[in-house]
Image (cartoon, rainbow, N blue to C red):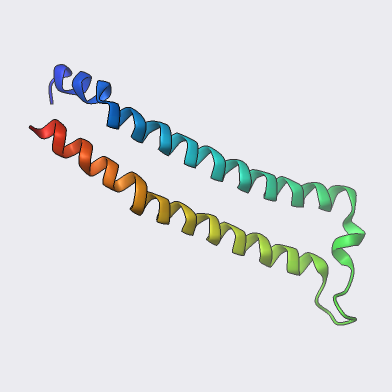
Length: 102
């Protein structure tokens, strides 16, 4: 690939839209996960008794439930990324590849 090819691809409007959408998606999902994780860390730091409370009098605590919910949230965010990548980013990427190959 020559520098002229790289320049023409980087100037392509669909490529610029692809980069913009991918950055926005990555940024939003990263921000959501960071808020969840650091929210949990702050809860542990400033209110550990909340996480130590029992759920319905058994051995399962609020902290265990919150931990499971954090793992499930990470799976959900991964699913959102895969869905958006397959339905939005990949078709746009294929379009750019087709148009720039000519």
